[in-house]
Image (tube, helix red, strand yellow):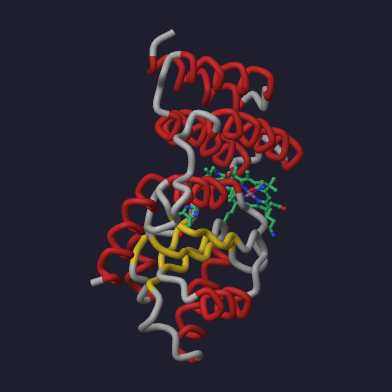
Length: 218
Ligand code: HCB
């Protein structure tokens, strides 16, 4: 199986909610020496997008989405074993991450957290369904360089705008840079709410975070 075939099979395994197959393909990807991040982004995440489209069209139901997401998590766990060891010296910067209050989608945010650790960030992952005040308190406590919020629903992305405002209210907005992401979020939304960065996937999130941290160190 070549790289392209494996990506397609990985996406298909998620659409079929076949955890056994998804895990087997993740192991195969590592044996073939493929880039785990690329396999997550172009294989498994692509499958999750297709599941989302089928769900929207009423062609699959919530239980199937749950099983598909469990298959995705199991495959990502295997692929993460193929990532380089997280840098022991956390020198790249301090990042606070979380999924906005009211939103339980956390797979993508989890991948961003893992990759940031690999690239040497000290990451404080607040989890999912996180109240805006908790983001603000953690930024204050840790002196974070970046706060990355994730929103996958139109109803929760507004929380990212509230985060901008609450950081301003707390006098922290000029001390921390904000990055937004999640399926419904776009560069346009980031610009509209005044966020410092938008990332479409975990790889881009790391690149943006590195750039941001560098500018903050001067
Ligand atoms: Co969910 N769901 N869901 N869901 N779900 C979505 C998000 C919809 C788009 C599906 C659809 O209708 N097409 C939709 C939202 C519609 C909208 O508002 N526009 C939706 C809905 C409606 C719901 C419920 C309300 C369904 C219901 O109960 N009737 C409910 C929400 C409950 C709640 O939150 N209060 C619900 C529940 C679920 C689960 C629990 C079954 C499951 C989540 C499991 C979990 O996360 N632990 C789930 C899933 C899996 C999805 C889809 C199918 C996939 C999401 C996913 O994991 N993608 C999703 C469809 C879709 O996204 N197109 C669907 C894979 C990851 C890797 O991608 O985009 O999350 P990602 O992350 C990327 C990227 O965005 C970026 O990097 C990541 C890695 O590359 N990134 C960041 C993410 N966060 C970042 C932060 C940064 O700062 C920077 C970059």
